[in-house]
Image 1: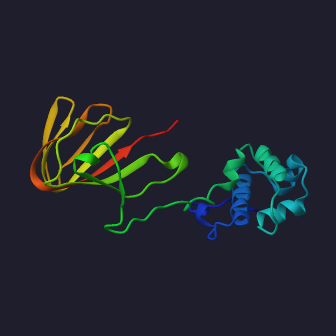
Image 2 (image 1 turned 90 degrees about the vertical axis):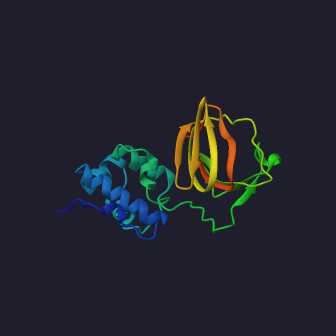
Image 3 (image 1 turned 90 degrees about the horizontal axis):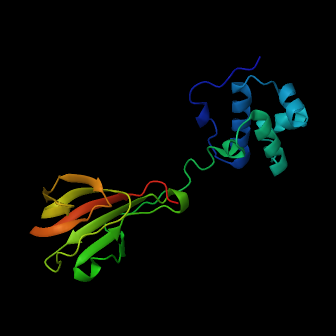
Length: 204
């Protein structure tokens, strides 16, 4: 008698290797649907011996076999790979090592350091460390898609969003719609440092 995997079974593929993850997912979906190995063999046209090897990560699965398994289990083919990329991409930026980037305010003394960025479909957040000094000037306000989060680290400034004005000190935070005109409108106590995180949501 086969026993369905309990809570935490998604963590049973420690290596993340392709064969291990496919083995875990095939068995997971089969047991969740109450399908026996013999029944899966009938549905896929594959032998029980081959299916047993797949579920025990003893063989590589061809694309056609994956397609047949996904169809028989009524799941997308991509579901059979879930877990391979669980720790796919991360960007670590040591203190003081953020990449300096050029932005609209760069030519008026605003320093922008990019603290990390993912690629492709996961490029939905842009974290920046913004530094304003004696050389910085107030400049026309920004507008961009998405939602922005600011967290003050040092100094005092007046930050504008639309018609509103916010005096921000260390520890203060502000969340706002990036489509509204926004940006520093008065530099009260320098230097000013704040964290800016823009969330773009689903990019198209």
